[in-house]
Image (cartoon, rainbow, N blue to C red; front, side):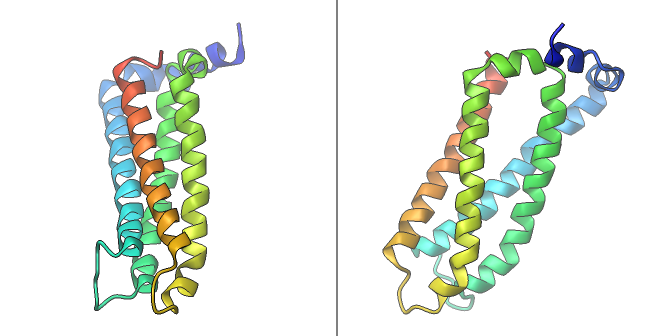
Length: 159
């Protein structure tokens, strides 16, 4: 028996998998945390693109308010995602869509970190630089890709 099959049969995983209320709560928390994650990232991205032009709030102010929510929701999404993964680990590991989601998500995390690191520098310039806007578009596309891959996994039972 491989590692992933053994993980699925761990007593705590079997308990969790058999508990419909607990499984439903974890799944709902996973989706909700992803909505917060993507929504907060999108707020900063749209502010960078000038679509959200909050004249009373600088880019740095928006980032300071939004990024703690984004990083917290990311941690919750990772923990709950791992719990969801454990119940069908063998199938998930064999799924190209699952691996695509993970890879795209890692890229999204790196892009979000780069954006967060540079918001104060970009905020001091009279106009948002083109590379910042390009990064915002890339970020939006990445998080959309993560969500679409997640839907594919949920709809097709990880195959």
